Image 1 (cartoon, rainbow, N blue to C red):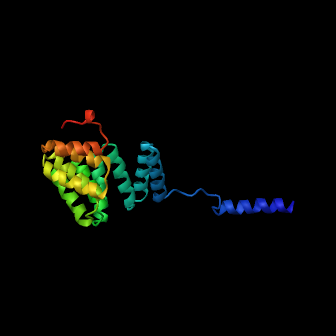
Image 2 (cartoon, one colour):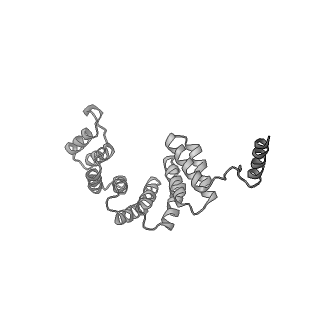
Image 3 (tube, rainbow, N blue to C red):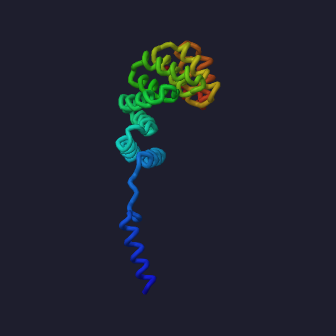
Length: 198
């Protein structure tokens, strides 16, 4: 009977002191949960948790970066750009933030400021392959195919992925270099009958 009394007493003390209290989620908790949902493809729950992370701590810059990336994936380029600009404000030497902002501006069709952001990203980190390929996309979209080819070639030299070969092939095709375009389309894994016409 004494052990039962002691157990009840300890439970009452712990409960009164908050020993059984549920821990309130922090901004970092919401950020981690949002990242988990993003990886599993539940974008709505991911966004909700990124929003809670920002609401809980407006100085959680990683929450802005993650939310911006998700918003970009959702095609919400203006909102993504806003988040990327907050990251830049707090971390003006973060190359990834400039390349993300540049990609968002390019998606909005604002090519001159996009180019400026991407060049800033490359000044901070000349090996930022995302900035290089995005700059290639800006040049392609503005019909500067020679510059696009140069940027995609740099990207391929750093990271030879299918997307970069495909885009360089498209730039070669638009630039009138069909043989080079076909070589890149083959490197991208396309069969000749499936070569695109740009």
